[in-house]
Image (cartoon, rainbow, N blue to C red; front, side):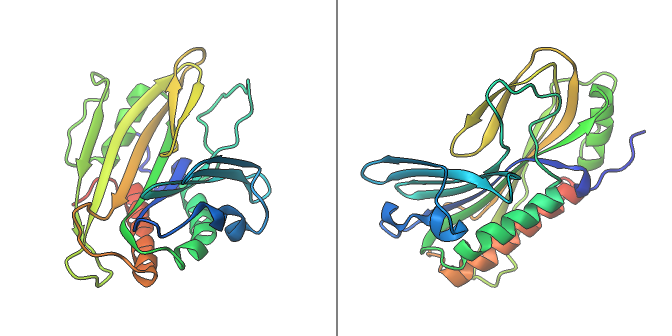
Length: 256
């Protein structure tokens, strides 16, 4: 049997904050990446009238931070630094979920304190847990999916997705939090990478030495049908709750 895992074993492929602001609440002239980090981004791509992409390395080359603004949507994304023609012998991760979540909160938290009035807020994480082989992956995944009965020797191609909504503890009247997760066991030979903007999801294709892992795709968010706008004070409370719920999922797995 595989040893029971904790969230310290999960490695980060990407972390994302998505905010759906009130129309016209932010402009591309605000240059939010530079305002947040204090230095200009390495990459700026501007498409008039209101689409902006800014990206650069942070924390001494720990990872990339990117900002994407399009009408009605803002994304902040942490992702790995990958070089052209880089050979990857492991999954494209850049730190433990526990550590990188702290980096994310420390980095993005100041921006959230001045978040524009928003209709919806979401936090996403794609995390990977390396395992020896496919069978070990299903044994490991069983720890996180107590409501399922897996057959490690005879199972394949599992993709388990579920939403477990909870009432928010922020004190915001009538607010539910969606806790959407997708659980898989992946086995790859080598990796060709494609970033799927703006979610930051990494598409992987197979090729050489076997690499196996459990993957959890976590999306905790406020419902699209919530009618009121969130102010900056409420956004901070929601941000803290969303990240805490994601950490709980990584620790405890799929629980009501």
